Length: 380
Image 1 (cartoon, rainbow, N blue to C red):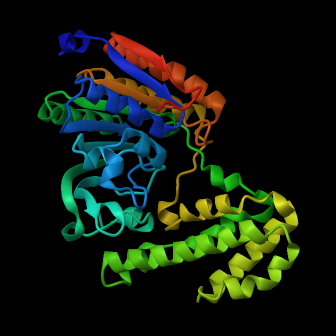
Image 2 (image 1 turned 90 degrees about the vertical axis):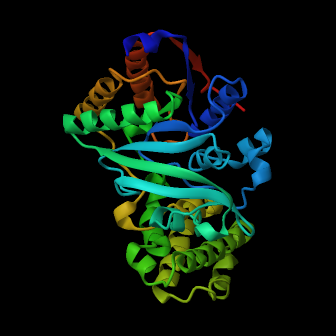
C-alpha cells in the first residue's frame, strides 16, 4: 500500500471559505486527473455542509461562474452530487456536532420543478434548511450514499473508520477527495456573540426553533417543510421592512401590522422584545438582514449549530486521531483544507496553528504533496 502513496504529487489546496474548495475540485475533474463520476468524498468538519441554495437550477450546476456565485459554506457539496461527480460521502465529525445522527443513509439529489435542486432526505437538518423534496418530485436524480461518523476519544472509532474508508476507497477505484475543515478541531458559532447586549441569539432561538416534535406533528415531511418555508419567508419580509424603515424610530409603531401573519403570540412577543433591545443597544448600526440569517440557522436545540472552543488537550487528541487515520490510507487525488477563520468559525490564531500541524501530518502521510495557499482571497 505504501508504494501507491508516492505515484505523483497530490495537490493540497488551502482556502479560507470552505466553498472556495469547490472550484479546485471541479478544475481537477476538468483536467481529467479526478474521475468525472462516482468519486468518494471524505469530509472532516463540524458541519455537514449538505444544504442547497433555494432555486439552484440545473443550468447553474453546469455554468461554473454562476455556480460559484450561488454556493456558500453550507451548500457547496450537493451540486457535485447532482452532477454525478460525487456519489458517496463520509462525514466525520467531532463529538460536539449533532446536526445529523450517526448512520448510513441513501438519498437522491435531483431538480424539482418549483424550487430547484433538492435532496430526498426527510431529516430535520434538510427540512429546516428547506433542502428536502420527496424522491418522486426529483428530475434526473443522482444517488448519494452518506455515512455519518462521530469521533469520540476512543481509538476504536478511528480503527473502525479507517477500515470502512479503506473499503470504500477500493470500491471507488481509489478516486477520492480528502477534505478537512479546521473547525473540526475547534468550533465557534459566530452568531452567539452577535449583538450580545441585546441577547440576540437567545431571542432568535425562541423565534426560529423548529424541533423534531414539530416535524412529527405533520402528516408528511413535505408539509412540514412548507410550513417552515412559509415562516422563513414571512421573517425575511419582516426584516427587509426593518432594513428599509429602521432609520426612523417611528417604525416601532407599525410592528403589530407587520407581524399580523405570525399567529404564535409567544413568538411575536420575542420578536418585539428583540427589536426593541437591538434598537436601544445598537440604534442604526444593526444589520437586520444578518439577524434573519442568524435566525435561519436555528432549529432544534438538540441539533444546534455547534459551538465548542476546544481545549489544547482536545485539539491534540483529534490531531493525533487524524494522524492515526491517515497513517495507512491510499493517497487521495486532491486534498482541500478550509481555515474557516474569515467567517469566524475558527479564530485566525487557532487556524494558523492547526494548519501548520495538519499540513505536516499530510506530508508525513503522503510525502509527495504540492501546497497551494489560496486563502488570502477567494478563488473562482
